[in-house]
Length: 328
Image 1 (cartoon, one colour):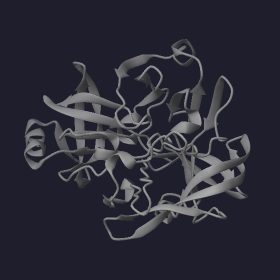
Image 2 (tube, rainbow, N blue to C red; image 1 turned 120 degrees about the vertical axis):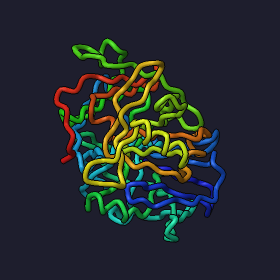
Image 3 (cartoon, rainbow, N blue to C red; image 1 turned 90 degrees about the vertical axis):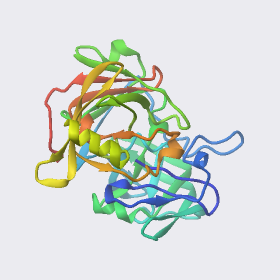
């Protein structure tokens, strides 16, 4: 998951895997979002082409990565549906020139960082796909994410595959992008569920109403995280008492969510998720006002092959070819 607020000197990026809360000083609707009319688009040259494209993924913990090379630096780009821009760089590893600061932010720990715009980045390889250059590329010092993988060089986001459906297959370690419709990406697949979603403030964050143990909630899907349930103390206690939440074996700080329902259909839950009774820092930028929020990431998604079709505003859960419970 990645959020970048772009108002000058009041921006923030959220990196939840390290448990760092984010304090943002910019308006909520200033989050990483499409360029306004007259403003340059970020990395417009970095776009998919072709009717069907497959990229191998490398799992590190709960995060899917794509092998890449930028300006002679080899490494991994996180395949993150929570990141809007096609390409965003970790300039701690990738050298950039003539970068201009467009904002700044800080974590709850007090550490500050700068958000930059790089006029030109050359020699980009994403999987086997080559791009001569990209303009107006977002960058920041993302040293923290090098704790996930030391060769972290940035993010691959929604605008890279905009106009395609994304099929994410953890079992086969691949992401496939389809320009065609359901006949293309559902061929020979067993559909477990079709989940219609809505989009609020951002075009890359699928959101849907759900119920957890009879309590209304909202789910936000995002490949760049494991998954967390945000609620209040009373509701958390109610779910524990009813058995909807159970303490995860071996880790009393984590919980197993037994399941949730969407449109009256019960779906499996996720094991080993965090349950927090503090506000979800990304709620306002995404457009969430509900008191109970379930962020859905690898903890749930690993049970399925999933198709993210933003054109039809539907996520398809497909039977996994091999259910994998442990990332590489």
